Image (tube, rainbow, N blue to C red; front, side):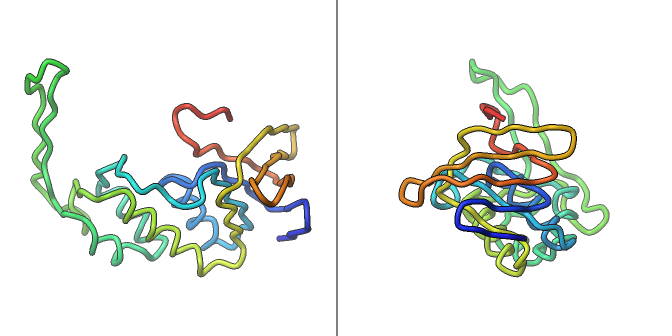
Length: 174
């Protein structure tokens, strides 16, 4: 991966470093793919948003080598009660099994999960973390994408990649 004063070249640029973007960066980093991970915030979130990880996602964490660390921060095998806006119970979920090595539902605090996922990235020199950089615009053609990013104190840069993945949430401009 080339990191110049103004431009960054990578195979994949990921916009957004929440649980999805951080997980993807770990997966690709472990496969040797060069990644530029862009996050407008200076750190991972400090307030919980996502609160549950299921057995399928735990197998993904196993694939990136973080299952042991993540199991240490989850409440394993918990249930949930879902209420309507009026407060009426409409669904109760109670996990009944632990198939294929992981509990069906596990509770966590998002700041703890994101911190572990970000720490996991430190083992990959092929992943550049660009926290504090905000995507301003992007363009794409049949073979590549370019993302213009800006930092409050470091100016602007352009990230060039073969692929761009938007992991920056439901209100994503990408």
